[in-house]
Amino acid sequence: MSDKLDLIIVGAGIAGVSAAVYARRSGLTFEIFEPKLVGGQLFYMEKIDNYVGAEPGITGAVLAKRLSDTLENLQISPQKEKVKEIRQKEGFIVSTTNKKQYYSRAVIAATGASFKKLNIEGEDKFTGSGVSYCAVCDGFFFKEKDVAVIGGGNTAVEEALYLSNFANSVTLIHRRDKLRALDYLQKKLKEKNNIRIIYKKTVSGLKGDNKLQGLVLSDEQGKESQLSVDGLFVAIGVRPNTDFCDGLVSTDDWGFIVTDDKMKTSQGSFWACGDCRSRPLRQLITAASEGAIASIEAYKKIKGSYLST
Ligand SMILES: Cc1cc2nc3c(=O)[nH]c(=O)nc-3n(C[C@H](O)[C@H](O)[C@H](O)COP(=O)(O)OP(=O)(O)OC[C@H]3O[C@@H](n4cnc5c(N)ncnc54)[C@H](O)[C@@H]3O)c2cc1C
Image (tube, rainbow, N blue to C red):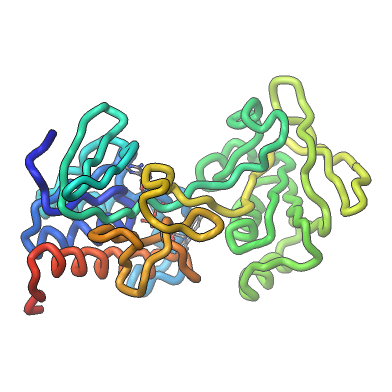
């Protein structure tokens, strides 16, 4: 087991990186854990919107690299390990999938969220062979093909718009009679002549041998129809990556960690920030600011004092 650290930060998306920057500046001893590349969901973004100060057109991958450089400049090297479990015992014992244990006074969860699956037969088999959860990652493989996107929120509409730039046709399938996406995105949809929308239907089956060839759609009465497609992009929302702290902190009905407005969870010395937290707006700007707040609050608790800045 490690010496007792002041703080452990779990996850190096924008929330975790922001927490790490403030932890370094306030002189805490800490480790940040991230099994993948620094940046989290940034890698799913073609173009970043709504992040004030970012130059227009900046891609998620570019911002992710900047986050990684920020850590490097502050001599912070993430531990390339996934946190498997956290137990409370005179502080926290953090176990990783590499079977290592670390010991800390405080924890910040910044583990974000992952795409929800449809949970229908064949979904795993066709993932990577027609079924995808990320247009920016896989859209390139569907040049001049017919694809469908399932979902009705901002992400689904953004995925449909992105795919329409190179797919032959895009069918957006939504289970309700109206999209939930912001007005400006819906306006952009209307400007595209290769996107059509099917309302009040769900995808109930996947067709194909080794590659996806079509979808079975069901309406509200259970009546089925078929749609030929080469690709299906699933954009039906996200679920929080909070299994590692199951039972340790209070969560809402969907598993997102509940905090107060200072990111404090139900468990003493345990904070949560970003998309793993129960919150009304899941965006970069909120994740970054919450990481900073969580870190400063952890500092105050650990050192029993306030920063002068
Ligand atoms: C397609 C798409 C487009 C978007 N477009 C925009 C946009 O234009 N503007 C905007 O503001 N927002 C946008 N968002 C939302 C934005 O990306 C998120 O709100 C933000 O990235 C959340 O950051 P985070 O740090 O909380 O989580 P994440 O980015 O999800 O990072 C969490 C990190 O934690 C790691 N992790 C998870 N579990 C563990 C574990 N057990 N141990 C260790 N590490 C772990 C993960 O590997 C990941 O790197 C978009 C999201 C998507 C999916």
